[in-house]
Amino acid sequence: MAVIRPFRALRPPAERAQAVASVPYDVVNTEEARALAAGNPLSFLHVSRPEIDLPPGTDLYSDHVYRKAVENFEKLIAEAPMEKEAEPCLYLYRLVMGQHEQIGVVACCSIDEYDDNTIRKHERTRRDKEDDRTRHMVMLRAQTGPVFLTYRARPEIDEQISGAITAPPLFDFTAEDGIRHTIWRITDTEGLVDGFASVPLLYIADGHHRAASASRARAELREQSFTHTGNEDYNYFLTVIFPDSQMQILAYNRVVRDLNGLSQPEFLDALKQQFTIIENANPEPPERGHWSMYLDGKWYGLSLAPDATLPVGTVGGLDVSVLQDRVLDPVLGIKDVRTDKRIDFVGGLRGTKELERLVNQGKAAVAFSLYPTTVAQLLMVSDADEIMPPKSTWFEPKLRDGLLIHTI
Image (cartoon, rainbow, N blue to C red; front, side, top):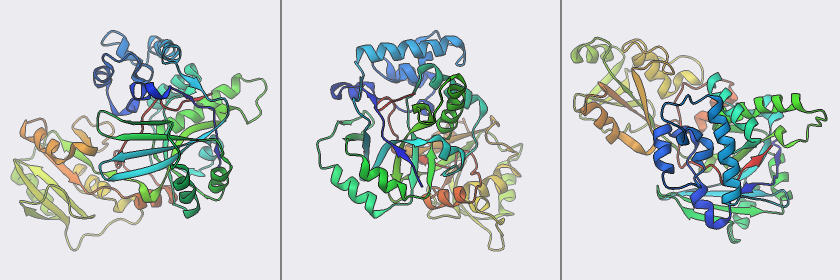
């Protein structure tokens, strides 16, 4: 069963919500965060990326950075001012981007269920990133950004949500990127809690490091507690849970800086050993099992040769895996995309024009446009207890940090 728990959110007043809300800490670097927060002392980036208020070049993992996060958090609480709900609530969070709309339930989920794989994963986490968010949570005694979960949609939950969003919202604003964020507060929580009790499994879509860090923070805080009962707030982590039927995954494309010592004709000849290649292709692949490649000002279409066989297993047949196993590794010499500095990733709305720009300006030698990984593939990989290659999924639209905070 999926345990969801109402919580007493720490949140901004409605008139300050847009000013406080910020993009997730891990989708921007320091300079991008500094630019986004410029002139806005209420931006939650001052808490999630506190190095923006310290001298350039500051070590991101220094004691000074975490102390600055605490200082900025306390300042925001006082100046927004942030309010804490009198009673535990659930919330509904609607995202609208163009014609796409999705509505999820904001709740706290059980870290026990994360640890025992009732909440399933598809991505490996990095220790340094876990260390960072674990320390951030423990020092703030708060989870400031939600983990993005999904589940196989159930009509009875859909019906409850449809009825609840007829009420006036708590927050409703359109961010500078054009995405509309609307949040409703649910004080009568029993129906949704019972509805999710019949959901057998939840799945992490995005936020593996936040979830892993919440588990580690729980272990650390439990060690410090003399009266641990299992009911403390630190035993739960902040989530937004969307039905799989509403999820949107965009392509996560690749650019490579050089051809691994090959000339362009040699590179194309190497690809012809594995793929059927056509010239003047569409920049976006038409379906799974096809790839588009931008090289020397021209788009090529790649599809596996008719006699090609895919490895047994769920992950091996993913388009990102085939590209890695048949092009990036054997031809371009990229063994580990997490550490190799010759490869970079272009996700989400930046699209194929960004791939063309990087190659045309000489910042990359070749670019690959992929068909998006599907939600069904994500669920299958998670159910098989397998791990997707890094940078396999790019979810849009993105949730905002700072709107609903879970104090621990």
